Length: 86
Image 1 (cartoon, helix red, strand yellow):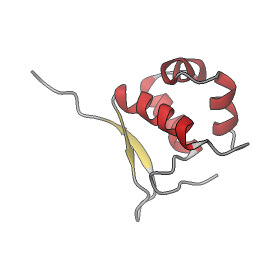
Image 2 (cartoon, rainbow, N blue to C red):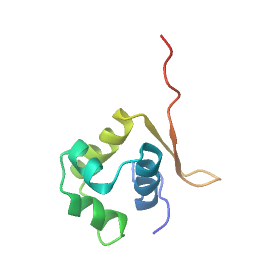
Image 3 (cartoon, one colour):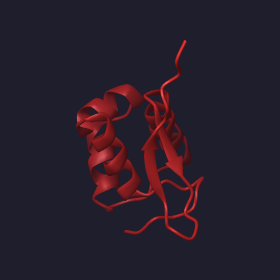
Image 4 (tube, rainbow, N blue to C red):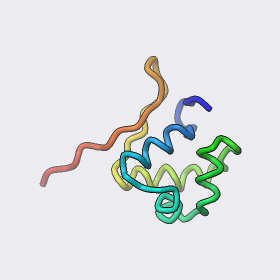
């Protein structure tokens, strides 16, 4: 499954975001308050997310410092937010 523009959330973005954070599917599921099977099935492209589940996953990733990048000319992506320096 390819990238889709936000507010949609692509399985590839989810996998890449977890990679940046060095999280496994269970860690993301726990942080988002969803089941591991939800993350696994979404990342495998077996089903779309309900809007509320997508919000939980995206919020967990963003709270951990991931920025989701819109699908533009270059396609969608992820990056780690620049850490704030006190």
